[in-house]
Figure 1 (tube, helix red, strand yellow):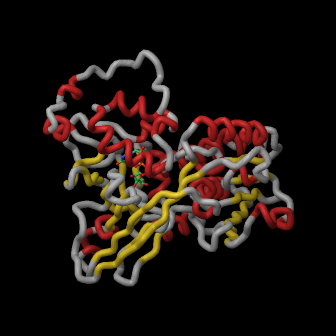
Figure 2: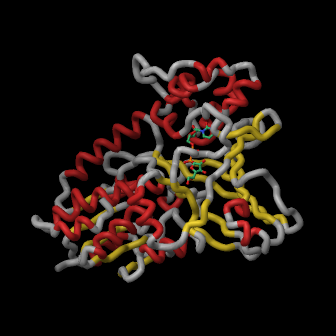
Figure 3: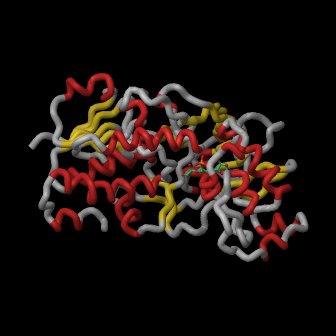
Length: 381
Ligand SMILES: O=c1ccn([C@@H]2O[C@H](COP(=O)(O)OP(=O)(O)O[C@H]3O[C@@H]([C@H](O)CO)[C@H](O)[C@H]3O)[C@@H](O)[C@H]2O)c(=O)[nH]1
């Protein structure tokens, strides 16, 4: 049988490759960068501090199948992210907590019935203002959002506001609703290598440039930017990335109270958050480290694929993506998927769950009309 070509070795490509390989199919992975794993990657600084190369990655899921799958590739130490926002010269919980609203005399907001809205919010700003008082929105959300996306928040899609909530209690964890949370103890790079173990992977190969020389495939899974796949002929989709400025402080033990501090204020600089990586390591490892390492993240609009991190959440990009998607659906034996392929802001567990579903419902049926039920049962469903 001809191999299945998987373009991109991020979480979507690697999960599809792993599952197809487990089912006995020949798989080849082609990765543009010199390293595997897409943005799921880390390195260890000379001090011993582990840094997530493309921004902090906190793994969390409510799916027992996804949790079982990720642990096949390494032990996860428990890590439930705590995030603070630097507002009015002090650290406040992010997401906003009940105690903050009560302190401002706005506790009545918490008693409001969480009814079904009469009509959908028209944009991000309207959606956020249904969740919190205007004064709180102005401090925590409006300027942060303007910095992250580079446009006023009323130009963004309402569903971006589904990425956060207002806590009805004082739980400081970023996401208490997720049952399983952690970080691979040996790091994300080792974890991704394990996921791709035994699979033929070619790094430094730009499929869009050299794809024709690679040879025939039974099926191709493309996880790069969908607009690039079609040579941008309908126009370019907009993406955002982050510029990262790292500072190692050899004589400082700790800089901030938790791993991530958000910086919504416009006057406090263009960066949106500061990471202190030592917090994201097991306590036993922290004790062996001298100094601390912090990273400031400042959003920008990248031109290079390797710097793409977020699809842009507005109506005109969504419409353009839909036009590309229609064309992608006409391609025989090609599937375009993943955060860049589907132009969708997937979290890590969502990317894995989606990849599992695509293998089961699209790829295996396309490869064989009579896929063995035993193989399908391997796919964590
Ligand atoms: O202080 C804030 C924070 C956020 N917003 C608004 O929410 C939008 C989405 O933000 P967020 O989900 O925080 O964005 P991102 O995906 O970059 O980062 C989160 O995920 C983790 C980690 O990557 C997961 O593993 C990360 O560190 C988290 O922060 C944002 O666009 C704003 O509109 C806000 O207003 N104020």
